[in-house]
Length: 289
Image 1: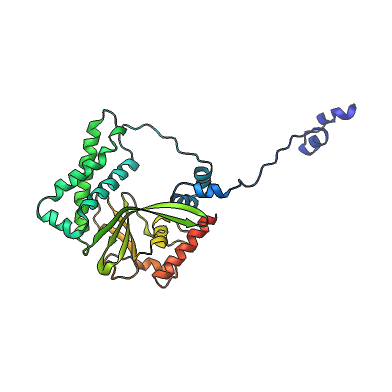
Image 2: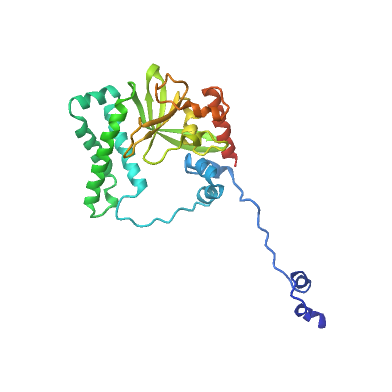
């Protein structure tokens, strides 16, 4: 009986273990991933983007299915503004199709009205987000119209091109992950070169394509699926004083005066094919993680 009270003699944990029954719980070191989960995992290229940025974020979002807490807004948020610009450009190029038609619209004085019509169509699907806030919609329409008018001048500086696809949907499998991807735009340029274009209304960092750990996998992922001659970001944002496009191409003839191929030297790759192979290896590594 006296031994039963020895627990009071010492407060050391190892002494406590001699006289007290402990509950145990075995926590598995991994969360099993079954084949069905691989096939139904949603998120497109964001699965790989989140894994690259922060593995825990990828785990929480794509395997635990958590989502951010949305805060009520009285105006369009940044993501919605970007979506409106994307939609307006999709509608615009589905009507205009090529640089020669864009040039003709400007020369005939019809470009401004064409852009207004496209923006009006694009923003219609977002009206429900701003109940009884019609003035916000008007202000946003005016902002996007001015933005696209400025952007059209950037497009006219390019060599002649044809827009052959907008919002093109493809499927790709990387390390067992089946993903649906959507390419903002595919152009046919000089000598029928294919250029994959992704619209960006925010900050662009091309060097993220060339780090040891691929930081921005979106366009490299599209590239290994579609084998284009170039991939490009289109900087559709206010105050853009540059040429508007930042791209990496197979060679300088694809889009003369725009290529930033000096970044490829960071990777040690000798040509475009080697770069695509490097990206595929990096994407498979992220998928395996």
